[in-house]
Image (cartoon, rainbow, N blue to C red; front, side, top):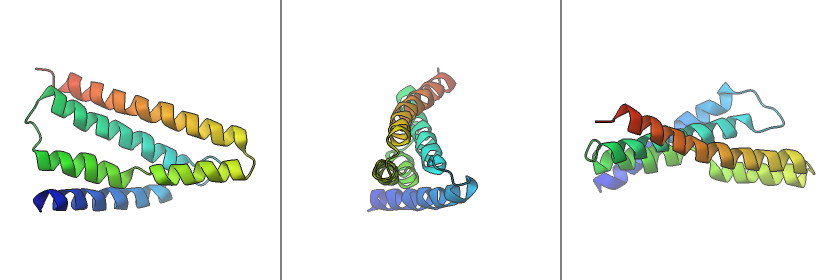
Length: 125
């Protein structure tokens, strides 16, 4: 039960932060807010995983659930990304849609890698 509450609380925080991010970035043809949220969320999940890898036991299992499954899951927006990509394709903006999809994939994987490396470096024993 506590595990589910940790995920739910993290999801609430992540979702509220995601909602706020939609106001922080001006609208444009390229879905900037979703892109930034997904890259930032990827970096944060990389930090969490890197911290756990560098120092097992540093975070409790419930803290990991709160941060990784809850916060990052509620904050990042893969379903929104998918909908926006489809919308660009449906409007005939094939190049922009393809660039958005490719940049999101590359930058989010790089975000996880960078976050993990930062955590491993900072927590080196």
